[in-house]
Length: 185
Image (tube, rainbow, N blue to C red; front, side, top):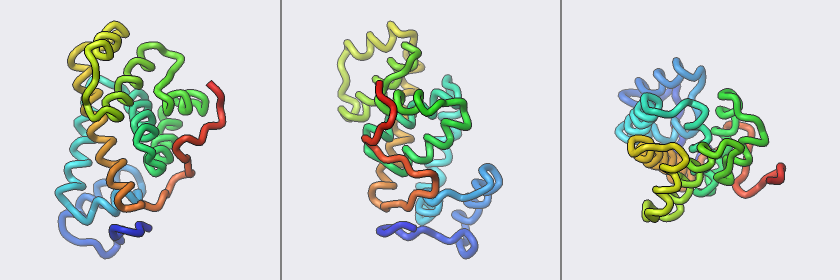
C-alpha cells in the first residue's frame, strides 16, 4: 500500500488511531490509504482531520476547496491528491473540463481563477508572493480573510501532498497524473 511508510490495517489498529479511523469510516464509508498512512502518527492524523474541519468551517464552498486542492496538488505534483480531489470534485459539481482548468490554476470564473492562481503561486514560491499578486486577487473579489483562508488551504493540502510523496501512498481512487491533461485550454 505504501512502499516507504507502513499503511496500517484498520482491523488491527488500536488506540487513538483506531478511534480516528472509525470516525473517518463513519463519515466517508471507507478509509483512504492516505489516512491509513497518517495513522502511524495519531497527532499528525488528528492535525490533518482538524485542518479539514477548519477549512470546511471557513468562507469557501466545498467546490472551491476542491478546486484549490486540485491546483495545489498539480503544483506539488501529487498524483494521490490529484486522483482523490478529481473524484471528490466530481461529487461537488466539477466537470472534467473545469477540473483540468483548475489543475492549471485556471477557471472560466475569473474570481475562482484568481484564487487558484494565488494558491499555486503561494505553493510554488513558498509564500513569497508579490504585492501585485495580492492586489490582483483582491481586485478579483477576495478580502483579507479570504487570502488567509487560501493560505490555510495551501497548508492543509501541502501536508497531504508531502506525506504522499514521502510515503509513496498507493492510490485508491481512479488515477490522475500530474501534468497529464486531455482537455486543451
